[in-house]
Image 1 (cartoon, rainbow, N blue to C red):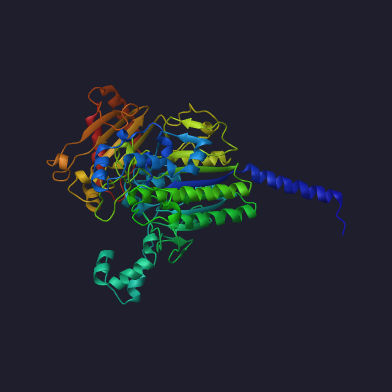
Image 2 (image 1 turned 180 degrees about the horizontal axis):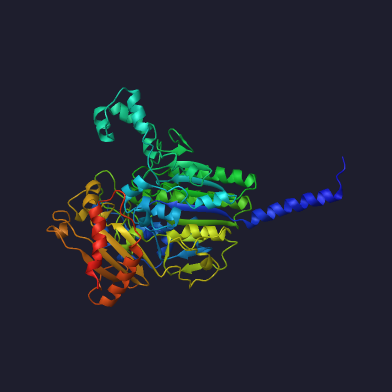
Length: 560
């Protein structure tokens, strides 16, 4: 059969137009690690020395594990060869903050580009009880615009499926209402069945990723998942059974399979690859492929950075895939962490947290509002779209990630969001100032790191007594209000302590050692006014102790 020439021309025109349209629509890969500290991400460490490590954290590590601090610093770079290359050809943000020092609230902020305090979310329990509001996850905008979307890995944005446990109890003829601890004590075999059911990683149907902007889901709705043989993982709406293999590898496989299918079908993709690494606890041995890269005398040090290198190695697999498919140049890669490192010496007996440098040069760790708790790594890589590679030193937030991706892909953004698009920065405007200031409020806890050593409580109990805090950062100044300390909780304040106000020049004093509040009352009043104006719209907490929240509200009486 002969084909008429005009038909051939029309076919070729439509084919080439389709290819051009795909080329013009960037693909997106959003990578997030769990509890990766600023100091553990070696691209920031060109000027960091071991003298910049937190003294208490360094002392605890010395007394318990005794590894070389110099090797710890060296390993921060040795673990990330692929990521370092991506940074060198992208935009690195050196003053990036999450919206919370805890994972679930931070992830809610990222997903919605909305300061989660506006939802009444201040701690983990608030987010786990509240979770996503239908229609608020900005991934929906990608899905509605023709992108195929996937979430792989940690979700932690909603309620568990509470029908699972009663159904199991009913099958065993148990009619009592029992919490999980009582079930574990009285019916250990039934408790094992609950564990194997995937309950801890489950999410309600309403808050499942498939009902919040995603076409495919493979992950877990919990604070952590086992590195091997996990029973917490779900695929779409079904429990995935026991996960075979090392989860960093498995999550990458799932993401690559999804991306391959999209490329083969000429569809743009938006993929969230949110790894479990390097969340506590890292006692499980990393695969030999990754562990053999590190040769210190400390298994603790080698193993942590081996898990980290596992992420880098897998990202290299993705980069090779993107290049082989010819879509590397027009794929936006974002990389960040949900909060600061869970830097710990000893940690509740069975968990040890992560090693040096932790969050150096900043003080604190996950769970509190010293900078180490919520200042994080962040970079964006996009060969076709980034005009000039470089470093951005002005303050940005992980709330800015989704607005940036939406605008970069031509989908637009909303002025009403707390997050702002960083597209001007990607286009070379490194002096851009997306935020005049940023604010935070929530629990100021020692539970998730080395500061627990200064408490009479444990990881499991300290957070109940932890004071509330709010923070504002504007230019190079951080102002923090910290609420009252109860007697008998903290070793350096055994008689208790009234609330305090602290002001720091974080450019010249990143470790927050010199409180300038008494010397700069005008700066204190200026920043506090901004905080109270901004926080007027924050809702009461969903679960957190309301008295703690009220203490934050009443703190305005302390300022002129």
